Length: 527
Image 1 (cartoon, rainbow, N blue to C red):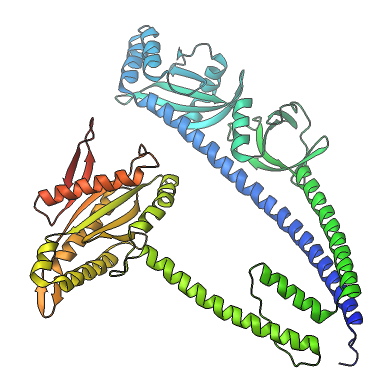
Image 2 (cartoon, helix red, strand yellow):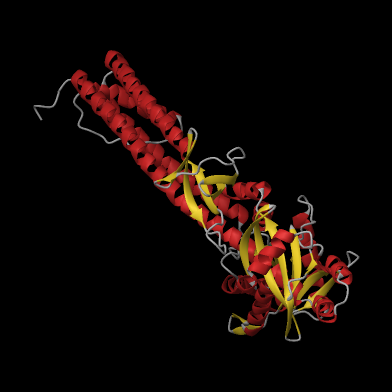
């Protein structure tokens, strides 16, 4: 194209300008896109976290109501309360019984009231007792919020009935104090505000009591800080109850975005200057074909083999570039062959050549990783040792080739009846192993039993002759007490003991290693 610059000097200027525009445009787009994503995600995160916090508080309400139900359903409490309410006995035994049975409950206050309004337990909590009397018909078997002498409280009320006779109610409370709010802040990462009448009564900020609470467009302004807030359900019996809000600081987020914008601008400036400096250096000292060869040489020095397309030779540098491309292709071909051989060597180092299963070396390498994964997932590792019964007799009667056929046949059964997540091994000779991450022993034992039955029901055919092969299996599991250094050795030792139990019991069976309650003597469980 005649309109395109023909000299390397003009081309370098064009290329540098295009690259600078591309860099600045990319950084600008990245900043505005990231800003929009962060703002949207912060809004979504606010709503999701508020709902999660609401769910946690709902769980606390259900737990408190469950505690009240435990007290009200206790037959001894019902009988004692019947004596106190209906016969008129002293309530001191009832109080002692409650403290003995339910003094452990994690509640802040409790009131037990008869159906006549008399306070039997918790007479010091007169404000709570008066509230229960006032709302008696509305609060039975429910959880509400109550604002009393100790501040805002979560109250669970449950009726006490003895043989169909309603005797009264029990009420348990949990105070929504500053420590409760701080716990919610730790769980959510945001702030919780309790507001009444346009004033902040309590919050996780600690110093905002009685501050004005004014929300505009979902935002709360407190001094120099702005918070995005979401309302949270706080069920009460009247409109005078305080309101609860969950919020996150928007000021910090905005400042972070501003800092990000400044950094982006600095990066754009630095990138432009770097491009200009590099362009000037190349313009002054090199031309385009030579710089291309230098870049290729640097990539080769770093261990990479880039693709270089050959072009029509018009000068000495083009000839050099084509020769360089031929050299790269030869190196790539040689590297491909080296990689192929290397992969074959790696595979042969960890697999058994006869069966294609993993060998003991792979077991020693993978075991620490699987044990760490099982520990993270609160699971155990199981290993099943499988030994072909009377294998020497098979070799003696049918020859070693028949024995090899039996080993290959059993390896195929292993692959067929194991899970995709299991690791299969030929430990040596006629001994195989299955390594699994499991939740309980039933799954591993079931697989071992299926394998045993499949082996028994599928004889090996060798030169027209049917050879029946059976297998004995020993199963063991890791325990949290196993030292890291000897965990594999202990696991194999236990499985080996279970395998010997299976052999001693007549072969063709599955045994599970069992720890004795106060000794290390293993036992076996027949599957």
